[in-house]
Image (cartoon, rainbow, N blue to C red; front, side, top):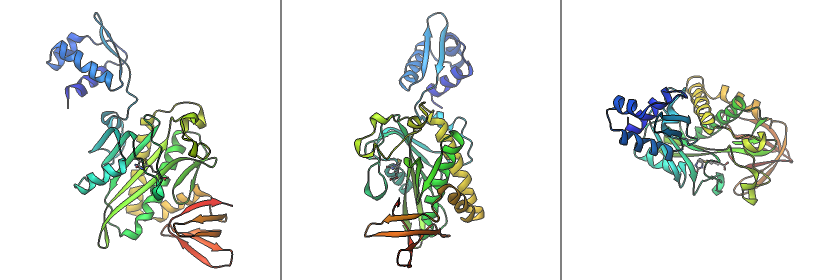
Length: 325
Ligand code: BTN
C-alpha cells in the first residue's frame, strides 16, 4: 500500500476529528514534511482536508472521483472489481482499454473506470457523451464458457443489472428498451455496449461497457441528444454519489452473472421481460440493412426479438433500434 493510501486510512479512522501531524508522522515512521506532501496529493485527488498548524489535519469530505481505493472500499462482491481495477481520469474509451487488457490476459472481473472519455462509443458506431464527473463509464471483462452465439444473453443480463441498480438506488421509473437501452419516461439514462473476442467456437472474452448518465445537467447535453437523453440529476434535481451507483452496479452484475452460470438464462430473461414491457407492442425495428414493422410476440430463450410482421410472417431479430409506434 502506498504512503498516500495509508495516510488516508488514518485520516478516515479519525472520523471527523483532528489528527496531529506529529502523531501521523510517528505512526507512519515518516517526516512531518512527508505527511504534508501526501496530504497535498490527497487534496489533488479531490479529498477535502483541512490543515491547522496547531491541530493537524481533518478529513472533511471524501473524494468525488471514482478512485480505485474508493471503489474497493465497501464493495460487496466476490470477484468483480476485487482484484484489478484500471482507473483513468481521462481515456479514449473504457471498452477499448478493457479489450487491450483482456488481450494481455487480464482475468475475469477486471474493471476499467474513467472519469471522462474522449471517444466514448455507443451501439452501431454512435458516440457516447462522456463528460468528466457527469456519469459512470465502466467496462468489465468476463470470460464465460459459452459459445459466441450466446453472447447477446450477457448484454441482456447487463441491462437487467443496470436497471436493478437504478431501481434499488433511486425512486425512478426504470424501463428497458430492447435490447439494452435503459430509459426513464422514454428518455435514455444508460446504455450498454458489449464487445466479444472469440476463437473458433468459443468466447475468449466479453467486454461489457456501461454508461450511466448520473450528474449531467440538461444544459450540458449536446443538442442532438437533448430531447432523448436524461440523467439521475435531471430526473431528481439532486446530484447523486456515483460511487454508490457503481458499487450497486458491480454487485447486481455479479449476482446476475452467477445466476446465469448456475441456473441458466431463463431467470435472467424473466426479470428482463418484467422490466421491458415490450411484448404485445407495435414497433418498428431499424436494423443495419432494413426496417421491420410489426407486433412483438416474444423475446425468445436466446434473447432474440420475435416480431409478427404486418403480412403475418415471423422475424427473429438479434439486434436493432426499436421505436414504439
Ligand atoms: C449505447 O449506444 O447505448 C451504448 C453506450 C455504451 C457507453 C459505454 S460508456 C463505457 C463504455 N465505453 C465505451 O466507449 N462505451 C461504453
